[in-house]
Length: 87
Image (cartoon, rainbow, N blue to C red):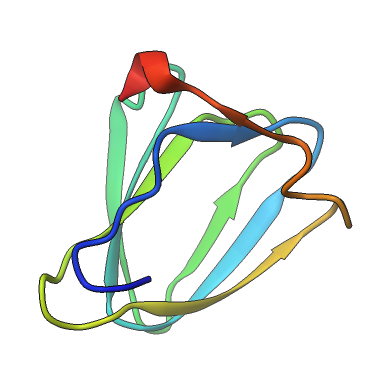
């Protein structure tokens, strides 16, 4: 994730996501109204259940964040649903 980048709120319907942070810091908001927040750092593991609204953001304005993500659906991007009402 480039410095300062953020993904809009979205949900992956019907499949889970597992993320292992390699470097940087990523703020993850999640929950029905994105009411929960955590900051994941290098070495942290983040699990996102199927159907859970979430929105990641690189905390740094100067350093990239890198992670490995795995999803239980080979068509993960095709089943992504944007949630602009949570932006």
